[in-house]
Length: 211
Image (cartoon, helix red, strand yellow):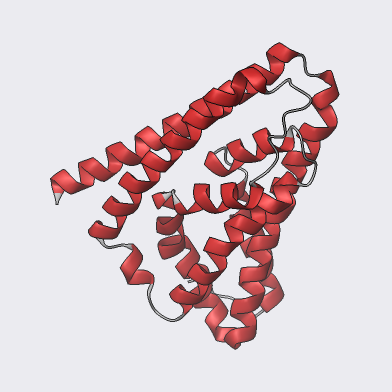
């Protein structure tokens, strides 16, 4: 629990902690880059999908369900299912990789679903909220429901701001991209999804064996 008698100070701490997490490369960032190559506001839509998972989760933790997220069965299930989902998304990305330079091919659709799927597929996202996030919420409880809502909104706005910045930068710089650069970027993002998917599956299986 972060000891503070000031809500603004707690929110500043929330911004600092949130940005250290959202700025780390991961599945959500990978899909933001690929969608942002054709749509400037893709990051905002991905953040919306992310929020559709995150905001209800914050409410559940506030109501006392954070212990559920630390159960081995939950970690195993999310790890295996999430890993397979990311592998499937990576496969789809590899399939469309040869077409990414085709001006007539719209690959910017499904931003909200992409944000939702990559968030829900990440078991470490849930672990973060069951630990670090729960600590922040414990401090926010001191300010009642207003504090909890302010914390949730502040954290999500950090996600929104960063992901929109990523997609905006990618979109604005795409004129400098050659066909080779497009394919390399899509290939790297797909590889990131494969890497995280494999990691999630391995972690789930390892936990299942240990249990």
